[in-house]
Image (cartoon, rainbow, N blue to C red):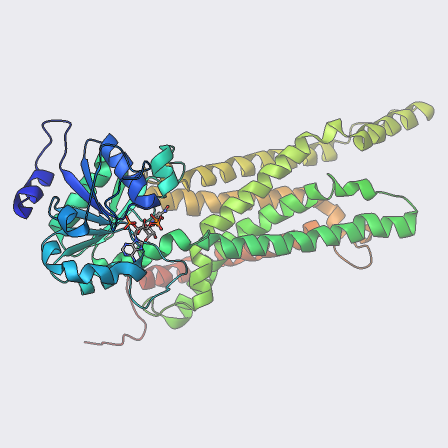
Length: 461
Ligand code: NAP
C-alpha cells in the first residue's frame, strides 16, 4: 500500500465503521491484546511475526505475515517487542522508511538505559517517524475491557502528523490521548508505569513515624502511668481511646505541615529579596507533596469523626455515665448545670464540625475532576484562604477542648505534656508567622518580590 494514501486515510473523517489497516510487530501478550481491541474498533490488523503459523491465541480476523511483508500493508506499525530485540529492525530500514512506528515498550527499572527506548528506535531507523504511546496501558486491561486503571495514553513524537495519526487510533479504541510533546518526553513516559505513588512516599513515611510516636506516647501516659500510680488497668484504651487521641493530633499537625513550606518559602524570598533563586531541594520536594499531606490529614480527621461518633456505644463510657448518676443519687444531690462548661463543650464541638467541613471542602477541590473546573484564582482561594481558615478552626477546636486544663499540673504526667499540647506547637507557629507575614509592611515587599521585583537585581539597567 502506498504510504501517502494510508496517511491521508488515517486523517480523513470516517464515513464507515471500517478503518485502515494497522500492522503490529510481535504476537506476544501486548500485541495480541492490542490487535484484539483494534479489530473490535473496526481496524484491519496484520501481524509481523518471526513465525507465520497462526496460533489460536491470535485474533481470528487478523493476518500473520513476515515482518517486511506485513509492514508494507500499513502506514502505522506498532512495535510490540522488547527493546533488546530492536536490532532485528535495522535490515528492514528501507521497508520502514516514512512509516509511523509506535514504540509501546517499557523497561524493568527506572532509567534502565541512558536514552529512552523510543529515541533508541528513532536512532536505529532515522527514516521512520517514531511515536511513543500505549506503554501506560496493560495488556490485561486492553483484553478484559475493564480498563480499571487510568484510560490516559501519553503520546509523544517529533512528527506532528504521525503523532496525530496515533492519537486518532488511541481515541478510536476508547482511550484518552495526552500529548506530551516531542520524543524528548519519552524517558519520562517510560518511567511512568514503574513509579509507585512517587509523591506519597514522604507523606506516608512521615505519617507512619509520627503516628507510631504519638501512639507510644499515649500508651506510656494513659496506660502505663495509670497502671503504676493508680493501679488501674486501662489497656483497652488501645482500641478506641488512644486512636481517637492520635487521629486528631495527626490531622492537625499534617494540616499545619501543608502550610509550613509556604511560610518557609516566604521567609526565604524576603531574606534573598528575589524569587529568581531556587529553593533548597528539601523545600521543593515538600511543596510538591502538600496535596498528599492534606489528603492524609483528611483521612485522620475522618477517622477522628467516626471514633467520636461511636463513643456513646462504648461500655466504658456507659459505665462512667452510670457511675456519675448513681453517685448523685446516693448523695441525694443533683449537680447544677455548669454554664461555662456547657459553652466550652458546645463551642469546641461547633469549631470541630466547621473545621471538618472545610477540611472536606479542601479535599474535594483537590480532586482533578473538580480542580479542572475552577480557575487558578478560585483554586488558590479555596486551598489557601479556606485552608488557613480550616487550620484556625481546628487549632481553636483543640485549644477550647484543652482550655485551662492544659495549664493544670495534672496534665503533666512524668513532666510530659499531654499530646494535645504537643499537637498545637506546629499549627500555632504557622498561624503566628502567617499573621506576621500579612502585616502590610511585610506583605507589600513579599508581593512585589513574587511579581518579579528584586532587591539587588543581577542585570541592572
Ligand atoms: P511478550 O509476550 O514476550 O512478546 C514479545 C514478542 O516479541 C514475542 O511474542 C515475539 O513475537 C517478539 N520477539 C521476541 N523475541 C524477538 C526477537 N529476538 N526478534 C524479533 N521479535 C521477537 O511481551 P509483551 O508482554 O507482549 O510485551 C511486548 C512489549 O510491550 C514490551 O516492550 C513491553 O514492555 C510492552 N508493554 C507490555 C505491556 C503488557 O501488559 N504486557 C504493557 C505495556 C507495554 P513473534 O513470536 O510474533 O515474533
